[in-house]
Image 1: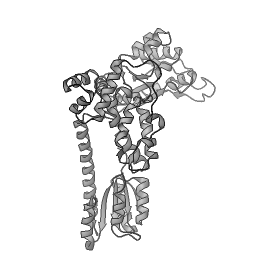
Image 2 (image 1 turned 90 degrees about the horizontal axis):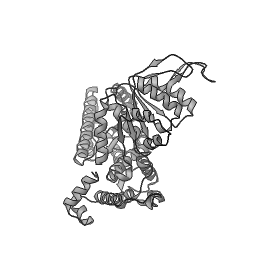
Image 3 (image 1 turned 120 degrees about the vertical axis):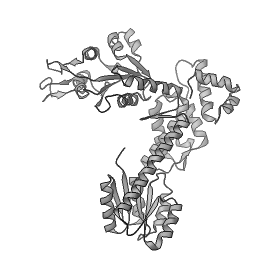
Image 4 (image 1 turned 90 degrees about the vertical axis):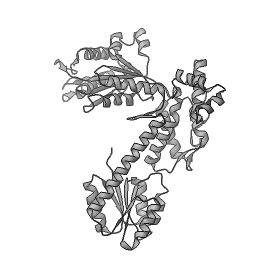
Length: 444
């Protein structure tokens, strides 16, 4: 969890200083404002977790500030500060959305008590959201959010193998979340407290990639002015994640194979054999089996990497995840950009499920962020999305099979309906048949 933040809106400098000291002791970062308008601006720019708001301010009342903050999508816990004569007004503020109030003069213990209540309330809020997700069949693991049966199965296998030292090959199209899954395996493993080191196999030319991977000694090549350990050494006792491993050259494939077999290697320009204990997870958007048949990838390396394969389905095969992910990204980006966007117009989710998402989850996130930035009203409408998403063109290549068409159509109808009976009526089949097809196609 990131560091918590607090905003103090009060024109009493001594009181603000006291609050800052107490909050700093609790691990909060603090921001202060001595006027209502400045407090509103500070709220919009910093999105604090807690606000201490005086009822009497030089330019406007605390109730006016409270009302203005209530219009924002970001919801902080607001504590009103009042004198004895204004307690009734403070109670009225609670009815309008304030969390609690403090009566001047108050003690440090009273502030601590309010903060304890706020933190307990936030913890319960998180627990309730988690329970609601479980009731809706949604799995939220680390950065993964899904209700799709295929993805749930992948996560189940990932958790099982995380406890072992077995090498893992994660396959799937770009943007499906292979890197997130690799990180999740590491976090579930006994190595979770050790380094998680990523090597992007597409980022560097061969000679530089070898140095990045295995390190080099001084004088190994022009520019090697000192000894430098590589990422293999940095991952000792942790996890080494090789992203897009299918891009490795034949010579690097051979050196990686040796490392996987013996956990031994040499730095570039060195003869000293070094040994590390790193768990290897590799990912690729290419078909390594086909590359083996074409002589582009070593078969022995493929077998070493592919002790366990985790295959991430593309987003077009997990349409039931689109509403869940869209809501998640909307919430994330409206908070990030401070936009007051509260949901989707009724036709938007249906529109999103008809688009093929060649860029998968990464593309969905980018599209939602763009829509949040472009939105002119409280809901995202079709006009907030790119033309290509609103009117998708057919995907070039092999036409889909009848089973693929049926699966996508059933998934689309399930997304748009509230019950199985309603979906069955629209599809023109009985609920028992729909249930069987739902199981067959792995639809959540």
